[in-house]
Image 1: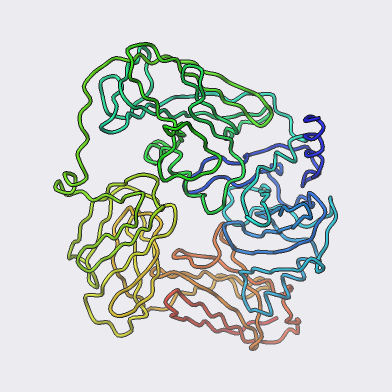
Image 2: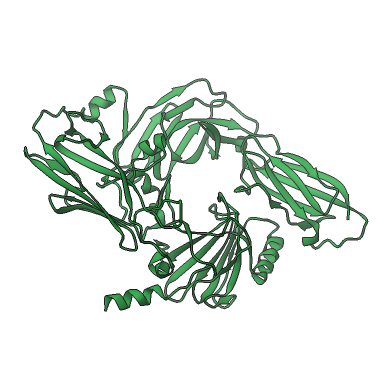
Length: 548
């Protein structure tokens, strides 16, 4: 009966592309700040492949330039799911006309169009778009997501398309790391996190993490692991089954994985224990959160069991010898404060203050108690320069950072917060009563106030043919929007720079193909006007005449 039910589930939907399925990425792969939310379908290195609806339903949304998706189509299905097709080159002709009409009516390129169930019904296998390489994409492919329509939880599309994918290769384990709990455990005589070794000894409370990948035949790619189990003396102490990820929990991937190790080495060790503030629903553990208490002088037999969606499985057994030894007491929070440290506590709202600065990190924004290294330097022109911590330290959700203005400026609305962390990042901000308030998602780097009353820069690249091209940039607060007009009538410019639309601090190339506009060729002179606005509402206008 179970096999029949599974078979029926796998036939609800059909693949979004007509050629043989080859995946470049699977669901739930850990990435910095997010899980990979769908399947990546190869398109043989080409754009323009037909993309079909995987099931009956209706097109409920079109987006352009949002979430890194480039051009995307959303199809809502009657079974309670919504499928999302991303990085598209263009939409099906009727949808393309609908998009163009909306863009001209709203005089903007970036679009978010909501449709009713009767506006654009589709049947399974119906053409809805053509594959591309738009948005945050590193090569032509189709990214397909499947969501619970009501909760917007991210679902593994292989639950419904797995019958069309061939995979007989098991996952592979590359390494294991051991995490003695500070002040409560040691491994090989040390409280430091370290690699698993042969003839290992431990005492007290320790956790483990695993670095592993899944594989598929006829592919050089590696994939995330669907199911992980850790057994201690034959008893399951931890398991993960990567499916049904709440969209709001995306950044908790940094807590499940060893983010610091990833930041330094570019691969993930995923913990087989759960940090106290991590609420990812697909993680399960015993009453000790997966942390193993080694309190007897004997061999502890541990085993990892890794299983992919198709049931291919790998196992790794290892032994840790319990050996009694003294565990150094962990410094108390007050002692840490005396040493100059500050802790963000995972189980309370944190208000961190320095002269002229306040950071509010609410309850539930970090997975565990997180140390800060606070400093305020007087080198800034408009504010102190504040350091919260010198390493990248991402939060689960955006926190509120406020910085006081130290110097009068002509127009306080032109003030904004900059984060110095490698590159300078404009964080915007709102001015009120002598303070600029903004949102931060990573506490790493240093922060100060800047002032931007200079307009963006517009550089013509080509204005003497049917394809008009410009470079636009703003090295301060960043470009917010751009609009083009011919003889006072709006014409659509589109970004040409890969993965970039607006809100950019770097250079963006934009272009307008006159044959796609309402302007009719007459062979006469026309007045072209391009208006670019930055994120502090400074505006630059470029005007010229063109013959068309």
